[in-house]
Length: 278
Image (cartoon, rainbow, N blue to C red; front, side, top):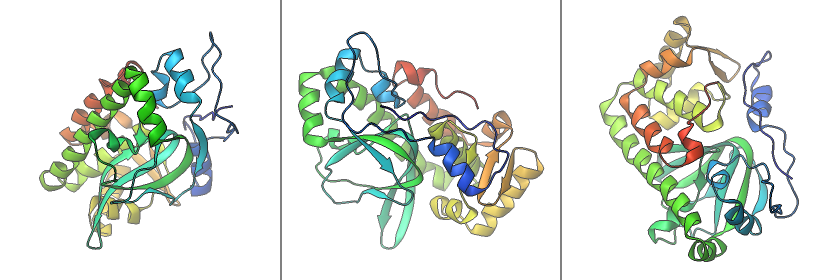
């Protein structure tokens, strides 16, 4: 009835395909909205859903649809009506502003969050493009169903608001980061953010991808990653980056990483545990 996602601790064969499978987990998707036993919680990895009371989880569970998230799949386009909210179970989503042929990534969303929750601020259209960069799975709900549930059950609304506030802060902080901090700080921050979002130390991303989302020259990204590797912070092979020394990498990250992480850590009980160090 649920997806079980195992954190990536070791990857003997660090090929991109193997790493993607490890990050995505083994999909065991239920075919119908899950039923909640009165005294037993189903396994739900999404932090927002996991923090709900048993009663609220049962109510929203009747409206949830399980879906597989495919790599490069676009979940939402800017200026298009928001029809669904996706509670991410596994995988990684890139939240982007796209304009005049240019792209700026403002956040990455993993199992701690949801895509499409911006409708809470009153808008009916998406302001961002949401793209799956690491495949996985999610629970999807129609916006009209979620609106109704939030009116009936205020705690669901409160949990979503807490997440959206943290996400909004990250988007704003990303804009400041891009003009204030150097490439080493920004790259270290992105690796830490992405690692937190998937709760794994192995990231199937390429130099080209990091160059595009951070707005840096590919040569600059390669130079910085080589330096990180020489310092023993990461290792890389065949389109895969593995974080070997997490604490020193965090020390290289800019202050934005700690500020944004604190915002997410305060959003709910399960998130206060932050991300399990992997």
